[in-house]
Length: 133
Image 1 (cartoon, rainbow, N blue to C red):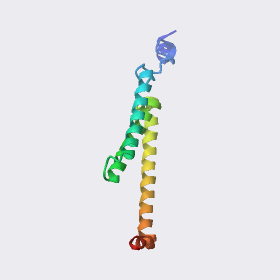
Image 2 (spheres, helix red, strand yellow):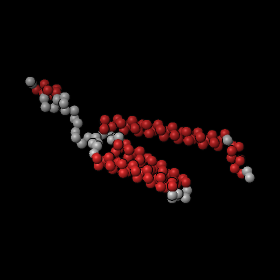
Image 3 (spheres, rainbow, N blue to C red):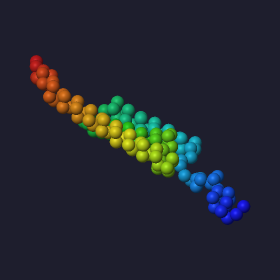
C-alpha cells in the first residue's frame, strides 16, 4: 500500500468515514418526547380553556391567541416528534418545510382575500337583510 492508496480511501479515513459526528441531528430521548408531549398538551388545553371560558371580550383577540398557539404547536411537533432541524439531511428537510409554509401562506391568504371580496361584491342582498324587522 502506498501513500496514494491511503489518501484515496484505503487508509484510516477512507470510505467508512463520511464526516458524520455524534452531535449532528437530533437524537430522540424519552425526556425529549415527554417535553414535546407536555408542550403539545398545554398548547391544546390552554386555547380550549380560552374559548370555553370566554376569557377575552373580543373574539379577534381569542382568534389571534389561538393562531399563535397553533403555530407554536406546529413548531413543537416538528422539533420534538419529527426531529426536524437545520442539521438533519444537510438542511434540505427544513428548506422543503420553509418552501411548503410559503406556499400554504400564499394559498390561504389568497383564498381569504378572494372570499372577502366575493362577500363584499357578490352578495349585497345579504347585507340589506340585517336591518329587517
